[in-house]
Length: 129
Image 1 (cartoon, rainbow, N blue to C red):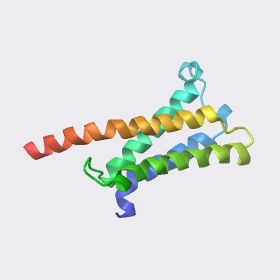
Image 2: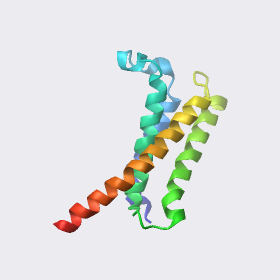
Image 3: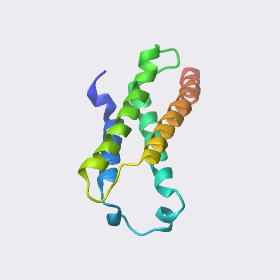
Image 4: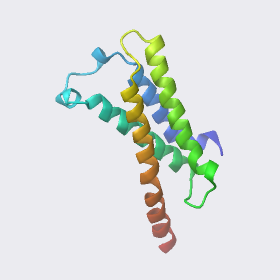
């Protein structure tokens, strides 16, 4: 696998880091950000997209071996843990949060679950043309 083939997921990983390490008061005031548990929803969506892009960039197929299919979800989990630890230890205006970590993990799992039906449909469509 070439690193260049992971351009979408690498850019998304950097985007997540920027969002998670930016002080909360630097975000624009919006009703979207003020909904109950909005930050947990944001964590969920960020990691759902991350997992989906990782699998898409790696061109994972449903028939791939166990480690190839599950390795990228392990990456997302480890990245989520690292971001929460860094928020807790190295940022002034952010704190690590177990519930954020759970939202990250749930998002990664859902991204993984969504990817495989998507890939089956995509491969059928591509093979019909």
